[in-house]
Length: 200
Image (cartoon, rainbow, N blue to C red; front, side, top):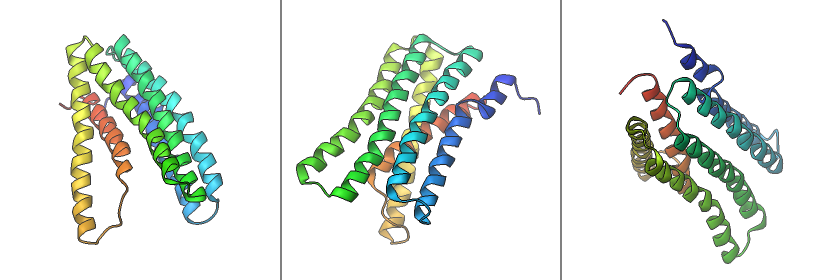
């Protein structure tokens, strides 16, 4: 099977590689915490370092791959930067907020402020996508971005509905609503990957 060099790099040193590496690293940290090999503070510290640290090479490799495939644009580079900053902020604030809530049990007003702090990067991600759709002048790239968003939205709706029914039937545990954001991001990434392989 003949795979073009740019596509091969997307799996070995591109955004797909870094995305999978981040997913695996977070899974390993969670597993170490579950089995008791590290405590809550250590797992928090590791997540705060590993997640945001992998965002930078993932976003840089995404821009590089887009340039190599001839589908990069100034709007795309700005989108990648905005999404990277918002994602890193989310990955920092989410575990910190959960840890503060679990260990300090602050009052209602502080909890509301913590929740708002975590939601601000989510608004940043949504704004980054919306601004990209407005700023992108290439119709094909805009079409791909809209399709990727629909993949993410479809993943949230489909998995959320399935999990909701299974939870209603008491077959699975409750999953907090904030899990929608990672599912949306993963769905968008899968959509971009699928379209990048030539499937339409």
